[in-house]
Image (tube, rainbow, N blue to C red; front, side):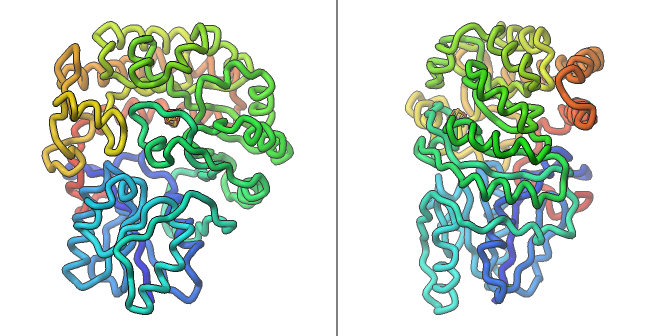
Length: 443
Ligand code: SF4
């Protein structure tokens, strides 16, 4: 038996390469490889960096779907299905939209594949493949098998999981919808073993909310300290109020934390169900706490809630410049399927498309709903203006000198690589057509 794993890409502009910063190691594929018995032959096509060989001799084509890549994933499936291959879908989009995925394939795995992968393969061998396997949330004791992408070139950063899910319920968040507001911590020793065997110096702890379980995170950071590694991760502003946690994070090698501020507007925070963040207190002081601990911040903002207007962009920019964040993202709200935001906008008759992710004329960077206080086009434009303004060279230089105060010299290069590249990519990322031009070079 042979399985061909495929990671579909978002899309690209004709004649252009795929966006560089979108080329991180695909952890899911390495996990599926680890779960697959060695008697089964495997291969992997990463649609972001190489052409897919539709004539490859294989039995099963396993495609992992995200919402942005669903259209492309279905297109790839159709090409392989025409050649008689068995199509299996998984990934968070397949979990949130299993009936939709079922229209394009033979089998859909929902939830975490770890608990059902072996049973699914056994059923296939018996000729009794089921149309649906519902995986439970959990971990395998296996480590991701990164040999599956040995011949591929990714950014030199190892991605590691320390847990899955998040206990919060932010209105727009697909992760909270996927895990039903649950958080599952990964055993400490598994994480430490994986970090120790990593071939890279830099690590990205991919959890959406790294400190969702405070005691689990604190214990882990203490065990990571002797490893003397450098890492970045994602958390919430709540860490700013926890000096013990901040100290342990820094000592474990944390250099950079991505924090979703989302909005400086209280009304918007309440609408997105982040009242807990609004209640944390004065933003300036919270940011200073994190900076004083020697940790830089990647700040993210999202615009499009009903309290947002033109002033919201100016405030977020001013705040980001004032604190000289390591970097910042100014994004528009996007209604992901399965989220309360999607449901609310649908009930208010404000969706521009029923399923924007399947629309061939929908492009990355565009809105898929009608905002309350400006047009969809203007909101998208203002996000781009904010990115451009923040990425101007004087801003980058000033923030770069601030970063060296907090970050070790060994990771300072990352600041320049990230900020200069982000600046270059602002226009490249706008209006990328979903699922298009991916069967052609350059990649
Ligand atoms: S805190 Fe972050 S990961 Fe958790 S629900 Fe909110 S947006 Fe999602």
